[in-house]
Image (cartoon, each protein chain N blue to C red):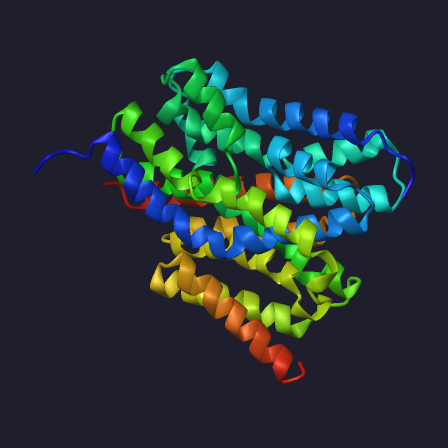
Length: 107
Length: 237
């Protein structure tokens, strides 16, 4: 690793991240957002989080990008249990159980 | 039946935040471990987690630094990973936009995936809540999460090499995000949004600077909104 200006990087990321998070909350106040925009925003977590995890699952950094069946099975179990049981906790536990089970079985 | 007070909302938010600990603590620990391995000192590692408080962006920045990427690329990519939070901010605004400015600043500092998802799903369920109640619920969800994020980082930084790589703690991160989303998949529109975003993210993974994730997220939002509109038109209430 090069000599980076670590504190400069931390400061820019801290301020930049805060401003991203503050943008609409801080500036739009109680002005109602257009219904069409709200319709899009309703799907934000359902779109952004899957987009974020898909590459992590398909090409995990921990395996140097090699697709790992244990991780895919664990992801499927998490989604299935979370969807059926409506519980975040059970979903994570099911996913972890399947992952470590699959690893133990040598998958 | 008495309506919900901010105090009750805070307590209910707190219990909604608790399950996130199962992923926040290992996630923080992972950042602590890889931060020290990358050659940062303890204060620098903690500075990241306390000031930036965005695990995905922190890990992205570290990975790029280990690849010796230019500082500008490190910053731009890590901030692009956080661009989704502008969307979180926009969808929180109608709920907490009239709160006092200091509260809005505090919410902005603490607007992470977990507190956002738990709060917005609750606000959809309880549109009658006033602003103070909604703010209290949000602060409830983050109360167990943020301190344990800091402590998780500290534990990872101190324990360091004692955690064997074979534990594959990294797997907790994607599973946590999926576990946030899955219980909310109530309609065909939700599923269309999630499925479109997932497929698009894989197809666009070649784009530089994590732009594929952002583009895929936007495509997923459009898919969800369009399917919702199509269903509403076919079956008017």
